[in-house]
Image (cartoon, rainbow, N blue to C red):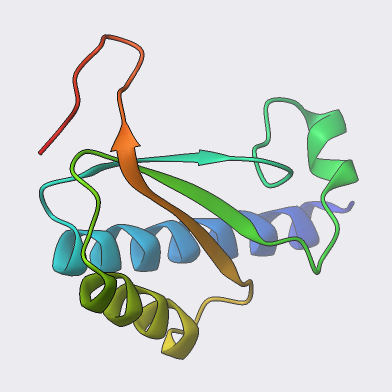
Length: 102
């Protein structure tokens, strides 16, 4: 990847992160969210393995959202400017420190 393409990719990733954070703050402010799956990049090699059609997997930590809240959150992600689909695992988890959120 050349320097211009890499810079464009970083700008796109930063913008995507801003959108994800804004939607989570709006629709699930009491929850912590953790990304997992194929979009998690730990190294340059990981970046090369991410397929353009890969979704973003998010786990919400805390009391599960109601069905209506989940529908609103999923719709907001669907209507956002994100270039990827977002899958959400709905609450009931604890983080690594044992906090249940909420």
